[in-house]
Length: 448
Image (cartoon, rainbow, N blue to C red; front, side):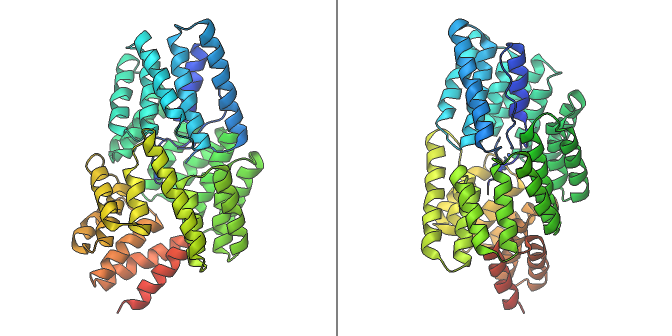
């Protein structure tokens, strides 16, 4: 789920932190976050969406030491507005690394202080845009990124955040142009990763892989950057059906950074695909213990359901609901996550209200899918079909999107189209999500 909110991919935040902290002559934050940040997380995601995160104690220690250094600096120079912006970004990074939303109010206060000291500063505007994107306030993030670009049109950082916000608003052509502009200004691992995601959204796995390899080759100074690129090469390989290559990339990510939780979850998916339930559960539980992202918690719950352990599944869903509620309490917009959770594991009416609320402010393939699935759960398949078609309109190779469309078509007795999309979902899934595979096979067996 978190991967649906994955707009930032690798390093909007790290890029901004590096720029802001260079300007303040403070310490640099070496390790970058993984995305849809701005969201997708969402969900991937976000994303998602992205936006996932670079997770692990190594990165967390870096962000924590940077927070301490900035706090000490600001005690000596309390009117240093650039350091207040950098501190806000460090708090946002720490929130993503730890999945602890209590850092967001601290970031709000820090960026407000920077705004009072220098209301038109481009670094402050970019920092505020990143915070807004992290809390899924993408329209506001776009507004502030545009304001930052107006002040400094050569800021790759602001162009990167602009690309992230546009991605999560469903304005994909504009997002791609903004990502290209960021790459023109400051090419590197994060810009290649953003461009890779734009290709992935269009279903062009060959181009997405080529660009992610460039990101990997450019990641020469940070273990977390290398781990990030390796992990996403694994995800692309897995989507293409090459589980052996995916496993190699996940192992490479963990070799570079043993604390990289996303790769641990990737390894759990491969174990599930190979029928190694015990191994998958072990890796998922370790991933959730390190970083309780909704994505990992729900995948573990679904694995328990697929293997006949409903009580354990219910425990994990309760954890996921609590996590979403906690984020909401600290200012994160969580309608998309609520819609996804409730449609599959709770109340269809609650899912539909949440999906409509999110669709009202951003029309992405993933919000379209969430609304389609909530309508399906509410028994409104004819209305759902249009949104399901829109969710697959870019050609994104996402098993969840294809499964949802196929299930809706099956409910409407359009068996030819349903069979096409369900088989495509099964091919992409490759056993990685056993519960969804069971559901797909059940629907296929029921088609005429």
